[in-house]
Amino acid sequence: MRIEPIEDAGDARLGDYRAGGASAGGHRDGVFIAEGRVVVRALLAGERFRARSVLVTPAALAGLRDALQTASEIPVYLASPAVLRSTVGYRFSRGCLAAGEAGPTGSLEAIVAARPRLLVVLDRVTDPDNVGAVFRGAQAFGAGGVLLAPGTCDPLYRKAIRVSMGAVLAVPYAEMPAWPGELGRVRAAGFTIVALTPRGDVELGELGSARPLPERVALVIGSESTGVGDAVLRAADLRVRIAMAPGVDSLNLAAAAAIALHRLRRPG
Image 1 (spheres, one colour):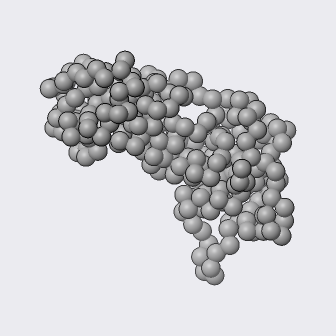
Image 2: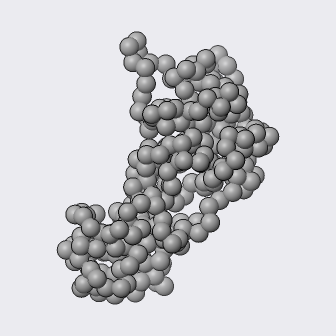
Image 3: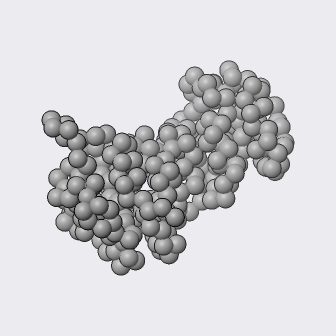
């Protein structure tokens, strides 16, 4: 573990973390920010992304020592809470951050070649909280990847990583620039395209009971404001809805995604 004390928020070594840089959104110049002990641990333990450095307060260092022992080549910047707060531009209570190298995104070919039983497709989901929550659910329920339609929030947006509890760093994802045409490639790889929509003609609960559960599913989820696009609904093999009490017509995206992923997962 290579500890380097930092006493000034203006120190050049903190450029990756400085307010207005990568901290303001997604990754900048190939760098993203992970924050909080759970997420920093996920970055250090993972294989898909490489950590460039860690920024930590003395109080938080104790809880990360074991993870940092195996990352001896990474500089660990030790700073006071005041320096950390001044660097990131707001009051920050988690005590640790890490800068990671984004690298290229995955590919649709690689994700479907692994033949997962469940994929998630995000159709213009712009809110980082929702993107992070979907990745967390995808990891929890065994989805083999997340596919991103144009207009979807960058999963490496700082808040998306945090809300995902590090799942963004573990679950493979790929962009789908030729949207929605690339759904045809997903179908050709053996997946049934299932769109989640309040206008669905099939109740989600019927799958696996009254109706057989497809062998491989690509679950399409749209934004809370606009839902799954009309062209995508027309292209889907199934349009499913979640049954709710009378007078209730919708759930928030994170809850709906978790319910659908739980229903569509296949054990083993």
